[in-house]
Image 1 (cartoon, rainbow, N blue to C red):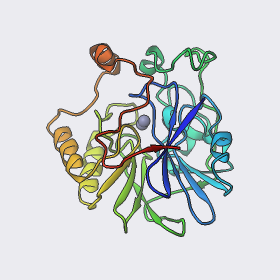
Image 2: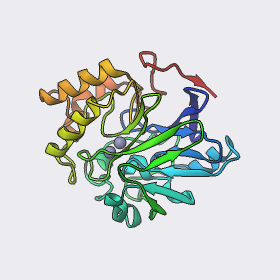
Image 3: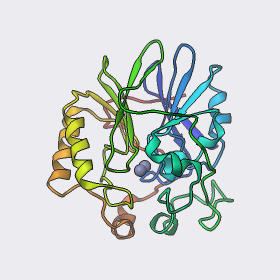
Image 4: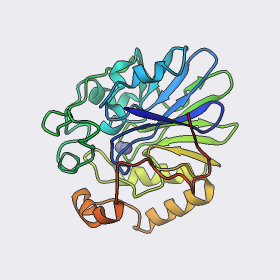
Length: 270
Ligand SMILES: [Zn+2]
Ligand SMILES: [Zn+2]
C-alpha cells in the first residue's frame, strides 16, 4: 500500500503514489547512482515515501523537487537532502494550501480514494514545511557516475520549475514544464509569456525521451504535437473545476494504475 514501482531502465524507475487520481498523481522518479540515488518529486505525502524508497536502496538519497506544487512536494520534508530552485524555496519552507496550489479547485475535487486513504480530508490536508538544503539552478550538474544530469531552469508553469537533462542520452525529466496532457499556465504564479519561451527552448534541446511530471513518457514527435497544440491554444487546462465537470465521466475509475501501453518506454512492475 502507498506506492508501486515500475522499472523503466536499469537505473530509472517510476514510483506511483496509489489511491491518488491518475490525472493528479505526479510521477515520482527513482534514479540510482554510484554513491547516492535521486528521488525526483515526492507525491502528495499521504504515506511515507522515504520509508518505502529505503526498502529499495541502501544508498543515501537526494530528493529533488521540480517545483513546489502539492502533488510534487508532499514528502520532501522526510528527506535529509532537499534540492530545488531558489525561486520556490520560500514556498517550500513555509507552505500554505494556496501557495502550493491545493486551496480552491483541487480541494473541491475527489482526488484521493477514501478507501485507500481513509484519514485524508481536504479540511486537514497540508504540506509539511521542507526548507531546501541546497539550491539547484541552470548550469548545475548532478553526476551520478553512470549518468550526469544538467539542471535546466524551466519557468512558466511556476517560477522555479526545473528539469534534469541527461545530455548524452537525450533524456529529460521535465516536471510540469511539459507532460503529455493539458498544460497548466494560469496558476497564481504562472507566466504564459515565459512559459512559451520555455517550451520553445525545450523543443530546441534535441530530447528523445521525456520522463514528465504527469502521465506516460513520450518522445520527440509527441513533444512537437503537444507544443504546437499549446501554441495554437488547444492544450491548456483553463478552469480546473469546469475541466473536471466536463471530463468526470470519461475519466472512469481514476484510481487505477495508469495505462502506459502507448508510452515510448515499457514498464515492468517491481
Ligand atoms: Zn505543477
Ligand atoms: Zn503536477
